[in-house]
Figure: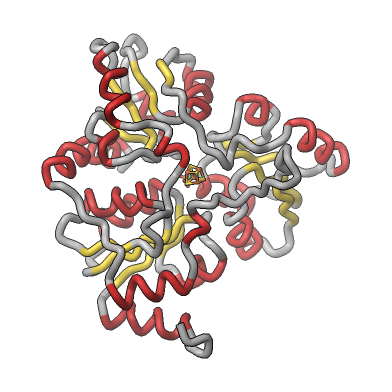
Length: 310
Ligand code: 13P
Ligand code: SF4
């Protein structure tokens, strides 16, 4: 791309020309968040994708999110800036293996975290996100046997919060497992007024000492709405842009990873760049396409979630 091109102006032009909407997850790089029509967590993005009347959905997030938008909008064009933007959590649950696991437990229903492929959604009774997982689980009777996939950390947290004993698939997010309990504790000693806020994809020892646990949108709302001035943020670093923008007088400290070579950025989310947003709008690809039978099967579990979360 010609470096003298004003990408912000070009993207705005393409939005109008193609009646396109840009949906961006809160982990996207700042420039993408700034050009987006809607920024949010997985639930908000799925709800927005279900409601839009745009002709083209530009999904600045990872593949399972764009796929979710396509499941809900078969007649619309859904493009993603980088087709390789995957998710370690989604990849930890391959449909053939999960199918066998489900068959071994025929008396269980399946609740899956939205961070999974269409293949897993098709094997699921109801989808949840980090912001509605507790309510979705509690919508079933206490004696209902449940398999929870694919995130063992979110599943364990929901088990604890609801007093359930769901059977957990052994998957995890590579970004949320890097935080160091020792280094966070040391940071808390130096910043005694800082609130530790964490995403439920973090491991149990981090969640136990957290002052607040929630989805990305819930974490953002907590930092904006509570009177606290200082926060240690245990989630992907992209969210700090919105936190600082919405509460510029407050201090945000990224939770330290256990290995100093590691960082809190999701390598999948960060594959997307402003240049790639422009290119995917201009050329209308890479496009998300899906087998219709798979789409219809996967849609049932998503529709159930959207009904419960209305
Ligand atoms: P939420 O934005 O729904 O909290 O999800 C976090 C995440 O890891 C998305 O990949
Ligand atoms: Fe997947 Fe974790 Fe990246 Fe979210 S942050 S997309 S769960 S790898």
